[in-house]
Length: 417
Image 1 (cartoon, rainbow, N blue to C red):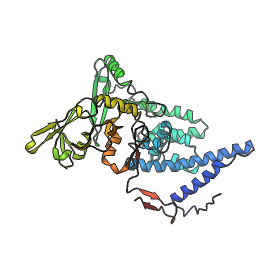
Image 2 (cartoon, one colour):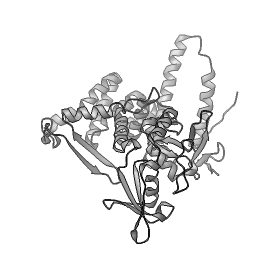
Image 3 (cartoon, helix red, strand yellow):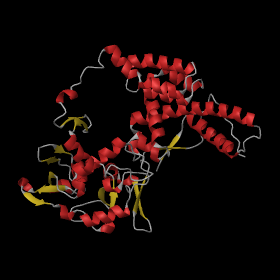
Image 4 (tube, rainbow, N blue to C red):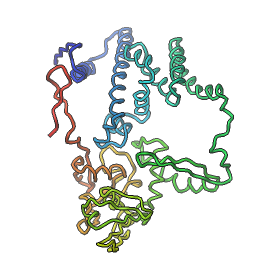
């Protein structure tokens, strides 16, 4: 048996986590007591301790999420990190992330959860209920829902009441019957509006009439189905991936022309541009050139067109069919994006005239990890399994801090080589 001695007040967060891990390891190997009454009492005490640990975890997850640290480690979102690295189911990952993001707006909930006076179930339920409220209504809702919890209402009852809060607020403000701007478009014609976000993305909303909806369902529904039992993406994520796949022509149609100098495509810094004049950074232009469905229009001196690539120099339909058979999901270990929605990736990178599009040099990678591999090649370790599939394993950033597991009371790290 390994012993552990920790001076709680002086110990660092790292030392406390290490001590907790040792205790949990020992506790997990213990046989349950013979007395059922003792087991009941111990279960209740252990559940309270676990709830307090959830408070600490919410704080840690919140810091990771706010800083976007998970992206440096190769995960496109905090939920993807929780699912892939920590093995959480989608519902639990979403629940923990909502609590982490809302706890600063729920001071009493956060305080009582940390003190063991409120269960994690109630805390997560209240956090979900206030996620779409403004700060003033959030404070009032927190008080009301905590009062229900104190009165003995189940977490399910609290959740049901919480789902009614927005309706009550709408009725209070007299806005529940007011038609919104979108409704005024009518329902006979389809419409879509998009707004570009500050980070280059787009917000999309709209309406499809019955005829267009049938086309939507017939085209996207097959692509948006779960890839299997391990595909834990929600419906919205699957639909977005399916739409992106269709818009790109299934990686088999030339839809976009990137205009750039030859020097840019071979490593220069001069920006490229789209046909509408939108500037594209050099690094992004080279990444875009990796994806089938894009034709690079190369310009020589004096902007004279030199070469317009066609889709035949990218993976053929037959090659893609083979790749989809080899790769049911993205080649990155732990990524659950179906292969049918992934991009064809040149395993060794792509360079003009020096990157054969041979089937044994190709893999399938989702759009996010394809970009990540191009931007951070030193964080992808590539191996090949006996069946001929390439396996991409995410590596920590080179400047990532590693726990030492010992040292002075303050949080101590050494730097990864």
